[in-house]
Amino acid sequence: MMLSASHPLPAIPAWRWWVNLGAFQAAWFATVLGAAQGFTWLAPLAVLAAVGLHLALTRRRLAELRLLLVAAGLGFVFEHALLFAGLVRYAGDPSWVPLWMLALWPLFATTLNVSLAWFRPRPLLAALAGAVAGPLAYAGGEALGAIRLEGLALWALALGWAVAFPLLLTLARRIERGASA
Figure 1 (cartoon, rainbow, N blue to C red):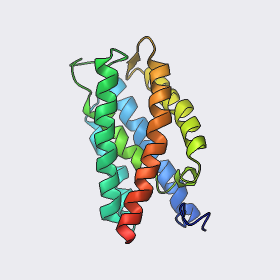
Figure 2: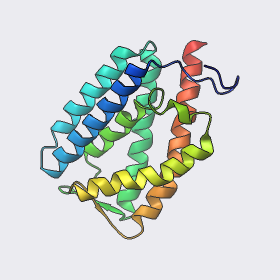
Figure 3: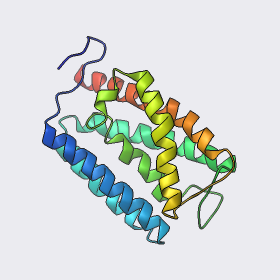
Figure 4: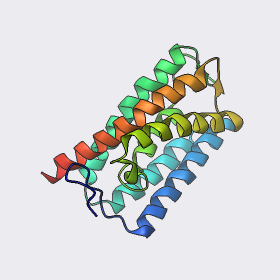
């Protein structure tokens, strides 16, 4: 289905949409609950399983892998900015963002061309969704005991995700377009 020449949406079978969403949710909960319970080793396993499934089901593996790496880099910068600003706290070494938290970024990127692809031609809606869902995800992590939010964290998260989500969608589209050229 084409919405316009500048915003083509990939044709995604319904089963793939559900598998993508389910794998993301399962890996997110395994990662965050694992971190909250001190099982940080669970994060790489859960995320690798979800990413492996995602890559096995896509035709453009190299492009998707590139997107996952870009998302990981963006997440590294974003999460460390939050940490150094004193807006988040993690158990363990407080000077470094833990691997489990960084792993959530490429995990999230697995949804950009599948279950969240419908946001691609809607950047303002994506910004609004990021501003709401981003802080809710962190608040969920806090409720589960994996992270502690400080001060104006929710406002910073809303602003950050209002930018990050549309940016990641744009990058997903550009990387996909480059792969098909």
